[in-house]
Image (cartoon, rainbow, N blue to C red; front, side):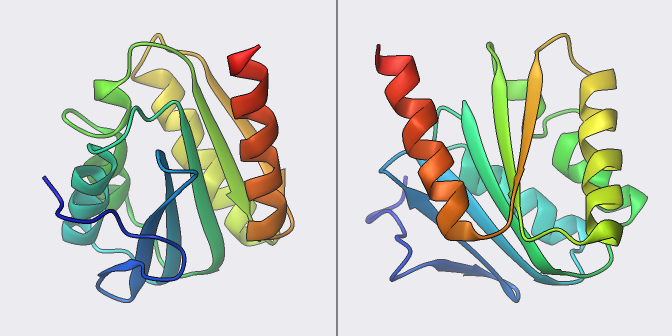
Length: 141
């Protein structure tokens, strides 16, 4: 277990990428550049410290995200494998190309699970965190 959870102010580095928890339990992944399968496995390990009902991915600086990386992220033993309920994914900062990449990833995830995966696109990480607050508030009601 992590000694101290990474925060926005003190994120954990996974290669060039950064990860932290928003609102205490929501994993936020900031992708910077290409994502290797090993980095994807470390992201999956990081998200293991959360309930994974809500996930934020900032893809403004995302590079290559190849088939082996996608498999490491969502394949057997990946993120989707561990969740019992709905997964709410917030993707921020995606241009047209990155939206296409993330659509491929979430479509593949939907094919390997019976769980409902809802995707929301936002312009910025700040907008994504507002959506997290709304989602968590709605769940608490």
